[in-house]
Image (cartoon, rainbow, N blue to C red; front, top):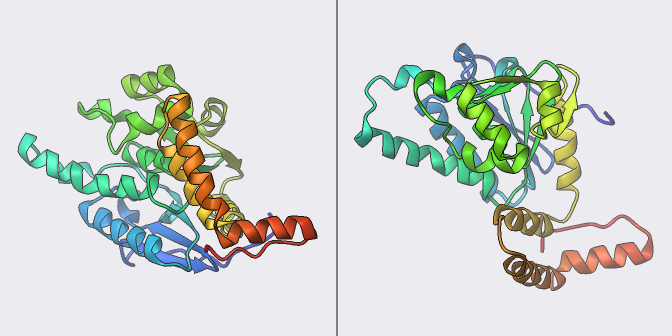
Length: 269
């Protein structure tokens, strides 16, 4: 890697979601280390607030999501599910769906940095991000069926686009856990790295994204998020989005910088 970032790893007793800024990149730590960052209701609420703040902050152009303690997330907090029924379950899911929307539909690119494992709802969060960086010893799986549940937090929506319908069914119906090499081969893991380096690599990638044109990246993410569309529907949406970008200061700057053979200075306008 070309640059090392002075990451402050949260202590176990710190807030459930800890943030740190590196220029235009915001790093978000899920911090429920005693339970391998299981998604307690408290952690979910803190993450939604932290994501909203990052999205609303004009100084932030890219986001990195990871877990503290060397583990991304072990998924849902099963200890909080003892009183669940059809009446209570629906609003519980709807509340956490806001977080999925922030990751998948939000205007800013999100890079997941997976150390240890992304399992169950932890995999759902990673799959909702734009890019997944994973350590060589990381594990990935969706064993919801082990507790008589189906994959949630949008996983049955995001996962087929990454690994295909058949492999999604295989993971969902067997509870199989993938090692990093298999996850890369299947297309689930985008950037494989050595153990212990996922956060640093994710910050480097997010920094490269943050140096680029934020409006163009937003349009790119939003159009990809609208798939699958018919060819005609997609081309119509593409024409609308690109026409808007042609009118921005960033496009004029990028065009002029290319012609002048210099690095562009994008401002998000």
